Length: 416
Image (cartoon, rainbow, N blue to C red; front, side, top):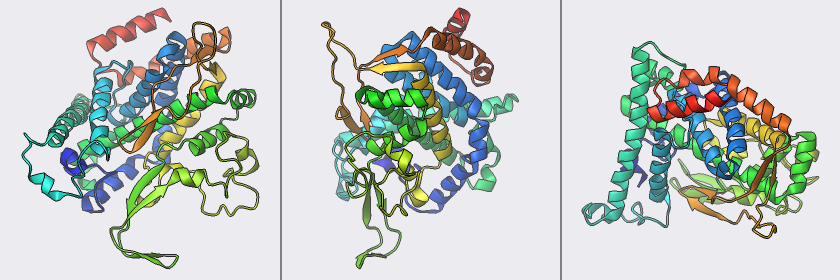
């Protein structure tokens, strides 16, 4: 299904080929530590809006997080932000993503890859082909619409140092055509939105379900251990399929070329031989060991970035993702008290990590309710001041906003 939708130009799904190597090289060209650092201002500005949005409308926190992650990566990639969840490009992304997740779900569509004869069924009889066509149309409208705007700004001399500007200027050296550029932007937009949003929602859930961890984090502002434990307790990608490029031998077993290997990240992080009480949420395990493992465990194969993937298929946007996770974790535990919601009688309504569904390759929490309150009036004052000062950073990413977004931005800033 992935090939039908993207013409095999999705870097995360396409085979090891010249096309994949060109896309991967281009991604590494722009997603360097230095480049990520240059985009910290827009990440900080957008993170400030998250705090402001949480204060103004805490009940909609789930969508505030989605808006944030989508706006940050869209600004960095294409030079255009999404000030509202209802911004056309934001809605376009989430609508196309719902369709895309259906295409990738192994239980939602027939096993086309395993049963090639299904390709010969006419589209009018094959609903999954209709789904692929609709998904392709929505993705292309978004990806190439954003690319068109980026090209037009460059022609007007209104560059804002987005990644796609660099790719367009170096496309010959990188061996990319316009189709490849559009889909490169698309897969990076997808990865930068979904996984970061999933983590931050899991963070909010963890702060609610494990109040002792929240209080300790607030007292120490020790976000590093908290971030690591959220990754371990509920990894964004618990089982990721890979394939061998050649015959491999492992512990006496021969794995033929093309063998599918499922990397069980969840199993690694919940192995009782490596972790004390792996089913318990305990950030303090990372204060006694870099990787949180038991004393005496051989941790030579562990890495801090294990949750970001392995080898050539590791997440190329790791530096941007880490900045977003660190920044927002610190902000949220500094600014708010999180608690379970209450019913009409004042009793707490339990929330659980079990309330999730698998969308495509990433299991995500379903929307849930919680109580979010600023820790003091001083927090509110600081957030409002910082959000007002962020205007200077925002404006260079707002040149092509829709009229409704312009009106919303002007109204909000007029109140500050």
